[in-house]
Amino acid sequence: AQTVTQSQPEMSVQEAETVTLSCTYDTSENNYYLFWYKQPPSRQMILVIRQEAYKQQNATENRFSVNFQKAAKSFSLKISDSQLGDTAMYFCAFMISNRDDKIIFGKGTRLHILP
Amino acid sequence: GAGVSQSPSNKVTEKGKDVELRCDPISGHTALYWYRQRLGQGLEFLIYFQGNSAPDKSGLPSDRFSAERTGESVSTLTIQRTQQEDSAVYLCASSLVSGYSNQPQHFGDGTRLSIL
Image 1 (cartoon, rainbow over the protein chains, first blue to last red):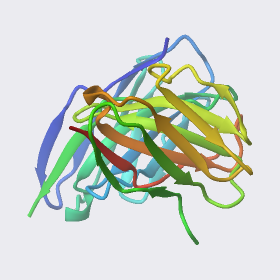
Image 2 (cartoon, one colour):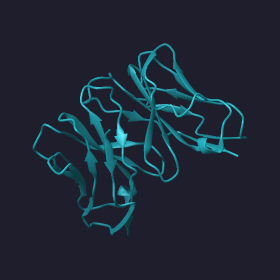
Image 3 (cartoon, rainbow over the protein chains, first blue to last red):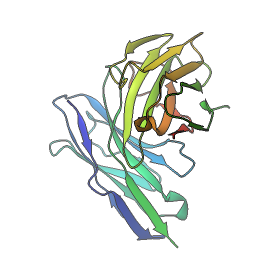
């Protein structure tokens, strides 16, 4: 069975600082996708970044980047120059490629950006 | 364009009553998913539809839960004889197709269900 673990239930950083959210996962599969979703207080789930397991290059989206370590089954999210609007719950998620598209989510990390 | 729409946004009901939650996916999205998010917990997969059929119902927590989809569009999640442990936010998502994992799932705002 696939599992996703986020070991940091809550984090706080000052605006403009860089913060890293950790995520580890467990699977015996070789082809899969990893995601970070952001959930602000509005409850809307927003896809932040996506990584395909077969790609060695780490995905980046503007201020968001990941450190994907396949052998270690680690998928951390780095937010640079953090902004107040980054305050949200962040979920790490996993999906097996070309299977039933069921996403397995971690329990989330609540991130507070302080002014 | 319109995103995934869920209704009601909030529902408070008494234990033992039946509730029906509605999801309107993005037009043209053939895949539709239901998730549950209990307070302080991660998202829990319930069921997904490819068109109007549900190939995977393994996440439904009990036989009190059922879901249907018609016209490859609207889906309803029904919970019969609600229990307090059913209190949660129920999120719906849709994507263009299933089986192609590079298609992102677009989520609605969820329905917050509170069982008294």
